Length: 250
Image 1 (cartoon, rainbow, N blue to C red):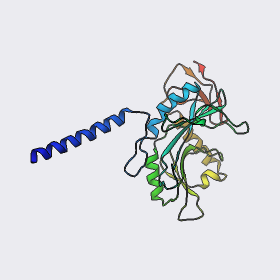
Image 2: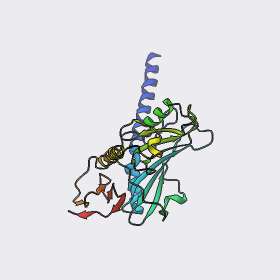
Image 3: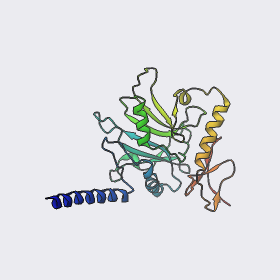
Image 4: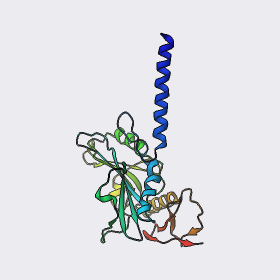
């Protein structure tokens, strides 16, 4: 009996390890924990970037959005990876399940009256960790979680935003700096900054994250523009002017 039980446990363990190994080999699928929280949102960026560049060669990621899939859902689970092409002024969206086609997947014209979106830099705060911090902050009834560079004011903070019901009804959600993992007061995202130094620090932090682990690809940018993304750069971005330009040969 002991030997049979041992074989059963061993078989179950090996099956579990095999399932985990298989899931790790698939770079196109999100994985979820027991509570339904997506665990590898950032890890899917290279896969979705490769897809976007089959549509537009200079596509850069500017936003990640996770939505609640139904009204009874407690955790945003459906991921959308949004890309922008400076050369064509179009945007396109990859879903967390690339086998599901939808109208927004193909390049769409970027609104003529909107400035180009700044590219997402390298960040360390993944959705799962940000969601844990959001729940610790007592946010409820969240329908969407968004990672993007703030453009509502000069503070170019790269932040996870979770809009929802807070214990303090004057607050509209909870926000976290995706580069430092620190919680951000929503006034820093929506109001006019109280000092120029705050703006300088935020812009410097953003520029540094854009340059993170940059590789020498034989092409460059006219300063002060930065080659983006840091790995396999396809375009230049001027942080101060918030404009894109083409890569130049060194």
